[in-house]
Length: 270
Ligand SMILES: [Zn+2]
Image (cartoon, rainbow, N blue to C red; front, side, top):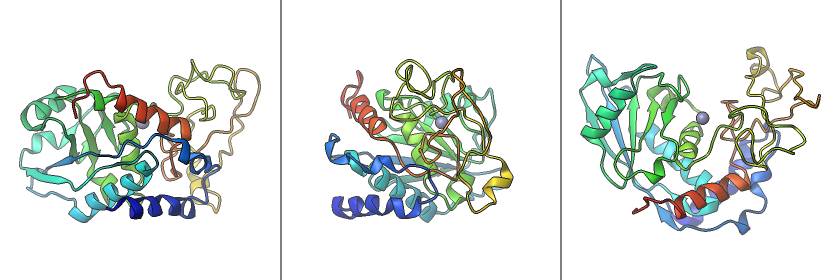
């Protein structure tokens, strides 16, 4: 995708994100570093026990195009995927304690110096997000073992922004509710939560399913307060929040951190 088209798509994102509480990520982007870097994503599709892939190539390309748009402010794109398909259905289900199976896949199939993305039916790995996927935190620093795992359901889902959440982890971002304890007034933002100060404190409580069906699906109706008795007002539109379905974009400081993590990665050779 051309840089100009990529940037135009980024500018259109707020139009599809009107339900999110803030779109502050659209401001100040001109002050961000421009990496001018295209990463190759190698998509490894694992077939199920019936030999079915259960994922369409256009779904993969659709999610990658959305990722291109979301990473455009720091001039990162993900190029054209390489795709292969494996019949080894034992890898199609990764349960809670199956990190060994993931390592085995990585040993067998990872290509160096690309982002290896495994597409499977079930991902319940510790540290990941059931239903959607798992990403190696700071995988961008790893030469031969980093990977992202996403479910076929994620790629079937109409909300193609979910892949960017896992790329966010891969580039070193934490979930906005990570660790808990971040105060609404921001006074401990550098040492609590996701350690990023322009993402508001996030209690990480999923919205009531009934609210998701309403006309205002991305409002946190629960009256949760922090240790100071202040009401939480998380940015539910942030890609790194767990308010799946409300996702809209990254914050300015998240972009800065992802760019820094790539530029300063100790093992970075690609
Ligand atoms: Zn996450």
